[in-house]
Length: 633
Image 1 (spheres, one colour):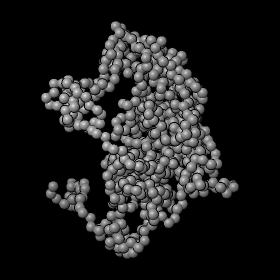
Image 2 (tube, helix red, strand yellow):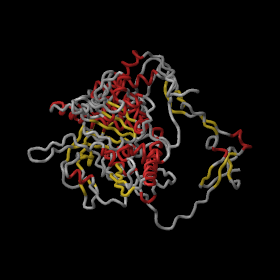
Image 3 (tube, rainbow, N blue to C red):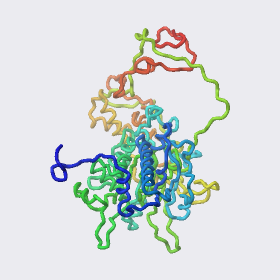
Image 4 (cartoon, rainbow, N blue to C red):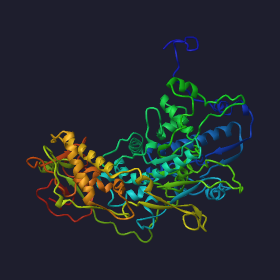
């Protein structure tokens, strides 16, 4: 394109690309305030991101450490850019002294044996426990006991509790390096979410009664974007995955005129932090996140509101009101964790739906909810106690990789097994089947004699949890032992908003949707739904038993109840109940989408390479595979 944008208004410069010199960098960053001064004093805020990192090979725990691969790469890039900038400043102007400020002065990530250890240059330490004991922050209350009777309560580490053997099916759990399906996580996590949400609703009403204009804020920290999207859709829009009851938390529902729940992706946060937002909605989301818990803008000496740079123009462009966009936000669904320095004083409840592999990560997540809502001093000269209830963030988990001692065992003899080209005609092909269904043509009935009952026991899904504030052990580590107030968190608030008839209709609706989606089903929904409702109603009344402590609404929060009516909702098998249609139709296989049929030994293309096995091998004439040494010929 020819022309000069400075003289021709029809020409616009969308971006400039050039290599910035050290002098230009210093002039841009230091500006006129510092000018040409030398021998500088540097104060690094959030200094746990400002140290040199020796890149090593990624280990299997790194995804658990950062959440997603993009977050890990962004962490190392951010630390490197910061240190490089300080190097360039020191080269040109000289840095006399550098002060690091951080609430979590630990090494994080690929730094070898130093991972999770404090910086060796720490000279003054005012720890989180000191801040809690001084009353400067809220008291985080964590689960210490539940009805399961286990040493570690399930909601203390929700992610580990969900991934316990036998809780998820192989299809729900995923492969070795794959994450569990979001629907499978929510199937078990919706109970602790509902438990804390009931407390949030009670807290919200108490704040309103006291004249507090700000709402309390509920935070959910998810492992990845897929899980966050499912949780957000379930809370904000009322879209329930198959086999999961509706949230029915009206305070979190979004409407055309109110945005009560928002979802924050780490990529959007990074783009807005670096000034590279790709859309106006991303920029607006950043303004929303920064104003959560704020009812008005600051004003100048003449009473005029001081808007952030670019906010007024963006609000006019998007036709949005000029009040703080995060003023009415009540729930935040976050991927990974919210950025450091995010200040919101109204966070009261936090749930972690991700693995936590370091003390640093736990402190950073819980730290989002520790800022006090009020610093007013009472008549006794002390500030009022404020608490933040936390599920799923295990504060005391610090991993250390064990080094097994003793002499290593002798290596096991291995054999190379591979496919033989001359036996290609013996190759086995098999379909990849996701499950089996039965066609429904007329009427659905249940063989009640073969339907197993469901017993809802408190040792499977805890209905009551005791939470307690953190103390300091005699070794200086956070501990849940010792003196302190113990609060009880129950499902009482949630039970008050649930009815058994709602449960029956929700389960019947899910089963009706399953049958209608089957190719062989010719029954219209308005004919099928009443049959399903009657079956589920009888099942709940006659086949479901609740062990105390419980209540009539307790089944609504139990994932095992997806068995009702012999349905396969929620990934559970249909029990032993039989669904019959006219002519007793045969089973139909449901193929897994987007996957080709399985072929041959170890499937293609790995069959060409074969595999190493350590088992004793026997001769097989009618097989496609062979082994080195002729053991299978």
